[in-house]
Length: 254
Image (cartoon, rainbow, N blue to C red):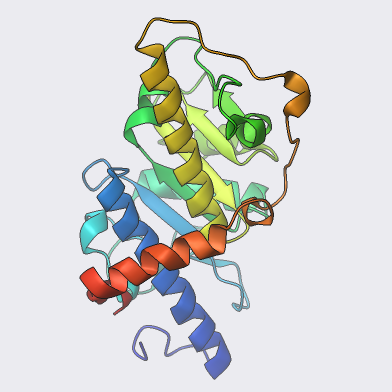
């Protein structure tokens, strides 16, 4: 740990950063197990709370989710310069993550992945979350659908468009692309991504029957836009996964 966070003078700040690195590494490993990543192309970032200038952790270019360790994550500024760690920042990651972090300080953690069911939903013309599962009572008011992003995210202008469209929502289904989820903590962003993908799996599986989906009463919507963990056990969920990783893949936290 020391060689990774040696430039932090406050030992408590070092401990906090290391704890966050381990949470982030756990999310990468869990994402690999759940099939969220598309080869080496996806990326998750986290703003560091104790830095004098805005800095964020992110996975370096060229790594599979299943091989990432806490010490592998690089530290970058919002201009995309790598300040600590080995490796480079992927350009697409820079344009998505930096622009969202700049536009929305509450988006402390940004998860950008291509999970099976959400990505499939993004490819269906006009498809959205149906108000058919209890999870959707929470999810639907938090979700925005990007119907314009047909081009790859190769510029700050496109990143800014994504950040503007995201606004105060926490889930963006990106047409023909994947999903971006933001949260105030690692566990909030992780849990929300998990629940969105799981709920989409239920919906897409039901749609395959060709039968109409039941619609829940609109008045049951929860209209909750705060942290996911305020409604669900987001921290406990990530902790449970970390116990599994501690037994089966303990190198994630090295």
